[in-house]
Image 1 (spheres, rainbow, N blue to C red):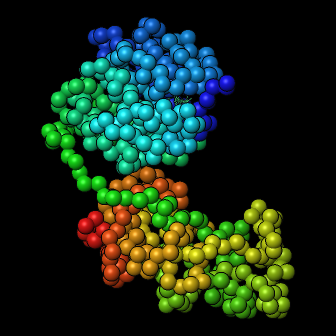
Image 2 (image 1 turned 180 degrees about the vertical axis):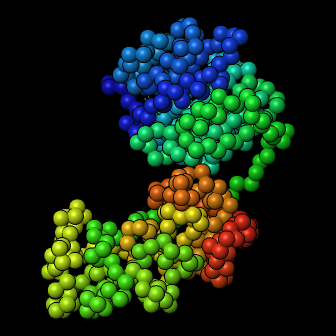
Image 3 (image 1 turned 90 degrees about the vertical axis):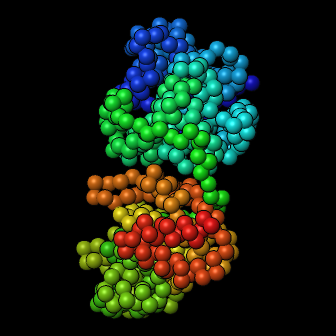
Length: 488
Ligand SMILES: C[S@@+](CC[C@H](N)C(=O)[O-])C[C@H]1O[C@@H](n2cnc3c(N)ncnc32)[C@H](O)[C@@H]1O
């Protein structure tokens, strides 16, 4: 029977300089330690350990991938091994565990791997369950494989700071080690991977100091620099009894609303225009669809006919040329369609345009309940859509609630998006650019865990109030109000 192999998505390998810096932090020069890399891949960590002159026999590597690496000879590497099954057969403990485990949702693994991953018990002895991601049982089991005084260094996804399934880990970690450091890089650590990462360093298992420090740095270079200075940075002592902070009852955003990008015109300068241009071209309103095309147009708690008309009067680009039916015969519409590129016509060779029929009909999202700007310095909020035929072009994301909800229920969820619970998560997953703008992809928004709001009868007026404060430089006050309403 062919062996189960790891999914391709988990094959992201740690840059050697990062592996070296992590290994150096947990290495103790005055004693020879036994090392474990539980998913060694192409052996970036094993090479870094061997470079410290650690004997080959003291370095153990495991990987599910059967393909050998030329560096396998640097340690005792077992291939084609599932770490979870392997670890259950071992009694020997290690002084150091280092690595970058796979980040795959357990429910997406092959049946056999799912079974072995879910058999790993959480730190409090409860089952971890199918809803977790593979990195979490990897971390839990690696901690178990550490002997007292042992050290651990792992690369983890940014979601480890807020995912519900890893809550028990977050609560207990500091009470299991002398010192825990958490280094979050604002920029992704891996080429071709847009998600954020965290370096977790846990030292001296069984120690009682309960020291913790969270570091936030810009990029991989600063992570490496910080790792080199870890001993000279202070850490705070955590309370003796681990705080069982109240975690709100949450639901994954994608189960509440979908986030998609607005319509892709393929040639915005031809299709999207202000009212003055529409009039200049003599295009009838029936050939146009009202749109939002800029983040500033949705810097509002809600958008309705009145606010849209005011943007039209201010000559914002609020129209999308999208003729259909009878208006195709309109003389000015026909003339605009016939224009050549040289004469201000459409570039029909553009990738998105040449593949659609008819070329002038931009596909648009339906049932738009709200708008979100993925790129913003203000943070994350939903501008609720109160104008039935209003859509957005692709600079803006549109949202649609998955279930049939009342107006008050929709606004209550929009309030949930402004709570501190969500704010903490977005801070961790946004990439911040030099100009202070932050970017969140639709998938990252859909991955957020939203506190389930209670019934808020006057949710619409409360949302208007909270969101106006949020957008008018009173964000902390707005977040506090959202917390009071949603996390009751
Ligand atoms: C993110 S890569 C990291 C590889 C290596 N640790 C590094 O940092 O370069 C994850 C590795 O986990 C391996 N893997 C996936 N599932 C595994 C399992 N159940 N047991 C052992 N290794 C596994 C994959 O083959 C892959 O090499």
